[in-house]
Every structure is written in C-alpha cells, then in structure tokens.
Length: 426
Ligand code: NAD
Picture 1 (cartoon, rainbow, N blue to C red):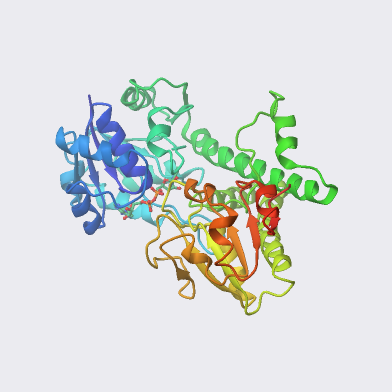
Picture 2: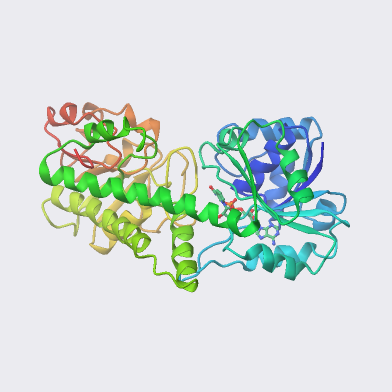
C-alpha cells in the first residue's frame, strides 16, 4: 500500500482521497482552505455527495485518512501526490491554470526525492509538460491521470470506473500509479500525457454533443408531434447508438462541461482547427435555456414582466449541491431579465449561497415555493419532486401551469386537473 497526498480537497480530491484510503492506502489530503480542513478533520463533509461521509469517517477511524492545511505535512513523506485543484474558465473561454501553477510552486521544493506528481485536474493539453518545467525537479515524474467521476455518484464512479487512463512518458511511473488502483476492476489504458489529457476533453465534448443533439431532436418532436420518450426507446435499442446519456433536459451545465467544451474549442483553434461542430453544440445549449424560458413565457400568457415563477431545483443535477454553471441559474437569469419574480426550492439549498441571485426567494419546502405563482418549472430532477401531484399544489398557485424540463411527471395526470403541461419533446 502506498502513501498518497492529495492537493486540493474538493469534489474530486476529497472523493479520490477517501476512496484511496478505502482501498487501503495511507492518504493525507491538503487544502489551502483551512476552515474546510478543520471541518473534515472532525468528520464533517463540506459537500453533498452520496456515501462520501461514510468513507471519510471510516478513513479517519482507521487512521488511513487525514487532513492538513500545511503543505509540508501533506507531501513530505508521500510517494505519489495528486493535484486536484480547480481549473476554471477565464472570460475568454480559455482555461485558467493559475491554481495548478500555484499548487505546484507551493510543493515543488518539498516533494520527496523521486516521488511522482499526478495531475488529476482537467488541464489543457500540454499541461503535463508545463508542470514539468514549473517543477524544475528532474527526479520527479509527472503523470496525467484524468478523472471521469460524476457528481452525485462520485464514490461509485471512483471505485467502479469504466476505465482508468494514465498518461506518462515513463513506464515505471505509470506502473506505480496503476498499482494504486489494483483493487479496482476496470480497463486500464496507459498512454502518453498528451493523449491522456485529450481523452478527458474528448469524452466531455462527446457527452455534451449527445445532449445538444437530443435536445434538438426533442425540439423536432415538439414541432412534428412525436414523443421523445418513444423516439429515444426506438433509437436506444440500436447498439450502435445505445440508451445512456440520452435524456432531453433544460440544457447542460455543471462545473465541467461548459468550461471543458470551451477549452477544447480554444485548443482546437490554437492547433489550427476550427471546431465548428462543437461551437454549434454550445450554441444549441444556449438556445435550450431560451427555449425553456419561451415555454414559461407562453404558459403565463406571453409576458413575464410582473409574473411569479416557482423553480424546483437549483443545482446542475440531482445528488449534488454544486451550483456552478447550473442550467437552472441560466434560466433564472433570463427570467429576471424579463421582469419575473422567482421563488426557488432545492433540497441542498437552505439559504442564499454563492451563485444564487439575491432577488431569488429561497423556500424551505417545494410546496411553500408555489404560493401565488403563475407557473411552476421543474429544472433539476431531484427525487423529492417526483412524488408531488397536482392536488398538492393547485390551491397554492395563481395559475395552473407546469413546465417539466426533465419529463418526470405524467402529463395526463396534471392536464386532467386543469394544468397546462409542457415537457421537453413530448
Ligand atoms: P473544487 O473547487 O471542488 O475543489 C478544489 C479544491 O482545491 C478546493 O477545496 C480549493 O480550496 C483547493 N485549492 C485551490 N488551490 C489550491 C492550492 N494551491 N493548494 C491546495 N488546494 C487548493 O474543484 P473540483 O470540482 O474538485 O475540480 C478539481 C479538478 O477536477 C478540476 O480541474 C475539474 O475540472 C476536474 N474534474 C472535476 C470533476 C467534477 O465533477 N467536479 C470531475 C472530473 C474532473
């Protein structure tokens, strides 16, 4: 079993740290956020992520997992050090790797001799080489090991991945990193760092393309009177197409898809290729937010000014408290621009937090959020909403309008009670 340090204890770093400890390794997680580290040291989890708390507590109890805000404590005795710091988007669409640079410079001189620095952050292609230059430590191998976990199922995805990708110019370093995962049964691909970095962007670009494609087909379904649910069943049974990741929705978002897509478009441009196809996937997604607002506008009579809209769901998907680039917030922004008032509920949002506009009224209960509203819009597919029926809300609403952007409700049940129902592609 190996001694591992994690640098950056967020969604990816905390999951990786807790899972590596669960696999038997000795793990120490480091973060510059001291408050977060203090909480974690007491077994308090700063994010919503299924099964993570159990694993963190298990790691702490078995002395396999510890937390620190002092870099020396984290890395000085470790064989493998994982970088899991944020790589957000700059306003021009390029990736800001300043946090990778600053993490590297904070540990460069204290990394043990011959240790391995593994990049798990999603970084522009060619970054491994830049890290090597920034480190200026010829004794240290830099390996790329992109992460594919999804928030909401992060622990499961980490422990049962569909593949493990390791990019290294040094077969011995690649082998040492591969061995950290030896208890996990998954196809392993060892490649060069540039290909490993490209795999991560390609995967996300393909997934967003699928989603934009399906949302376009949903728009066609609405136009011609077809039902997207049956259309998806009909094409999903074709093994060349498959059923996964084919649900229409309010548009894609989250902490990775938008920034990684823009980053790939930019990288392609730098490399001399105009990635028009991906430009279109992004444009179709922006259009999807507009289409959702159009549905709400139509429902309330063509004018949003002065109307009250209830929003169910603020996070970018169910199972996480992550609000970064959430489609729900993109829709809310448009509603505000047109003069609507928004009352919102989300199971993970008890009060205002960063990213939610001040004007939004936060309700603690989904039904309470419906008081006097002219329309209800379901934007995140939390299980909590699925069991709500028309009888639960109709007396609270000013007008009976439901916009179901995740197609979770039975249209007939709502229409029979006098609601106008609009889904996506049905
Ligand atoms: P996050 O914001 O949740 O966590 C990052 C952590 O790094 C924070 O706790 C922050 O305080 C810490 N940090 C910042 N600078 C630091 C430094 N110099 N030293 C130590 N700690 C520092 O980010 P995340 O969602 O975990 O994403 C991390 C990386 O993983 C990104 O590159 C992202 O694109 C990639 N990724 C994310 C996901 C996901 O679903 N969130 C999935 C795959 C890959």
